[in-house]
Image (cartoon, rainbow, N blue to C red):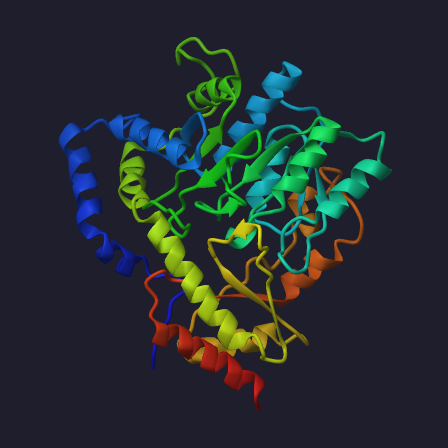
Length: 384
């Protein structure tokens, strides 16, 4: 029986083995494990790739979000954290870290519903909330480019400009993605990236980066990730130990040269899935916006008639891995209860998504035959 994993990191390592091994060997030679030369080189190369002035390496995608929001609080309000009545608009259909970062910055997350075709935040809901809640103290918007698909950044930035709001892009799943001709992470006030091993650009552990064109935000983020000061023995702010390890920076740096090639491979695999599944009754395919360059971190379909779990079991029996991203919306998690968050509207689309989405294997080096096997097994499930 074929075995098709969601992601085959061993296969990818073999593909770029020499580059990675050389990068690790170089670290073993110089032994500069904390903020070694690879960190600055990675920051500079990613800044150039994104077209921004600054990139600041961090210990994870989560910390990239926290550093962004904390830096904005200090710059905008002149205080360490936002106040509890400072609201940040975001999606409920995302990984916990998105909402958790808002809480850690001191602000109140306001969960809005998603567009059911893209799974990203519904910009109409952003406008509705701002128009219908004139007394709310909204300070920012935190869009998530889920599954590698860009949010409608043109509309989001227009709204942000009208209401004088900041925008922090959660780009954890969308390295290399674009809205029109702009790289994601270069459009808002900051971008927050993750180098978790499963990401499009991943390391061999945790890591991330903050991107920004704002000199002050960059300065503050650098201070915050090193305990809150320019001098760690004489600090200015409540900070963190949130540096990216030299070793992780070296590994990500060695893989950066492959990112466009691998994103292109992901898009071609997604095209095969789409062609093979587009006429299968019982499946809803996501929509790729024409203005977006979708980097297909996940290829996610929606299964109708409550058959998602049954299909997942059947695929497992046939050697095919699949995942549910995500089984619970943030607004139903305990951590966001007890007055820690606000909900606008029914969030019906987000709740439907948690009950019906299924992500299929998306390995850049996945063969046509492997992808076709997944398609055939799904088709067989619906033709009984």
